[in-house]
Image 1 (cartoon, one colour):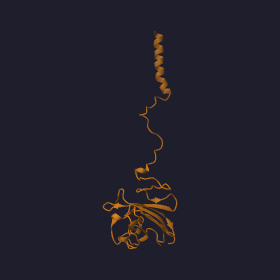
Image 2 (cartoon, one colour; image 1 turned 90 degrees about the horizontal axis):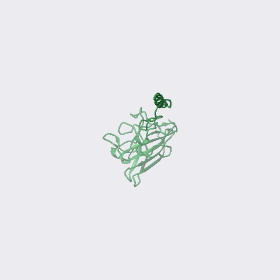
Image 3 (cartoon, helix red, strand yellow; image 1 turned 60 degrees about the horizontal axis):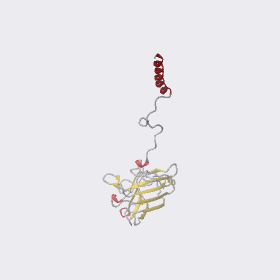
Image 4 (cartoon, one colour; image 1 turned 60 degrees about the vertical axis):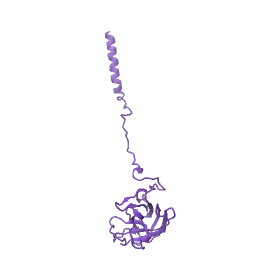
Length: 210
């Protein structure tokens, strides 16, 4: 009988000791936590749409800024609600690629969701109103029947963006797409903001000839 008690005690001791030696009981699936580096934020949380060449967000919510370390940058323009200047959901929009420096301002702009068969002007608007401090016409053209427009070329602005006379000089230059009928080539002559595209960010350009 004493021998049976001793064997039983040794068996219980073995049951208690073996899990400790093995590193303790394994956590269940519900108890396990994730480890390692946190994943990158989902771009879709902020900006939606697939990417185009160069990995830049392609769509109405893309970021604006320098494309890597090159001399090429990009700017998104949006239809905005003039009551609060918030971007209009599913509104008209455009994207401009441009050089950050050079003897001429080289650009490629594509706009979408605009008024069909309508003349538009891509401008540098320099505050205050009417935007001729000094401001500049960059390009003009007409939308097709689907409300899309393509503008491309180079413009000798003969100044940096922004110009020192611009009230936004310390921050950057405003780029707008406005109705050509509201712009006389140098300044705004009418104000129909629901028909325009406004910059997502202010930009800079270094005219190397200046």
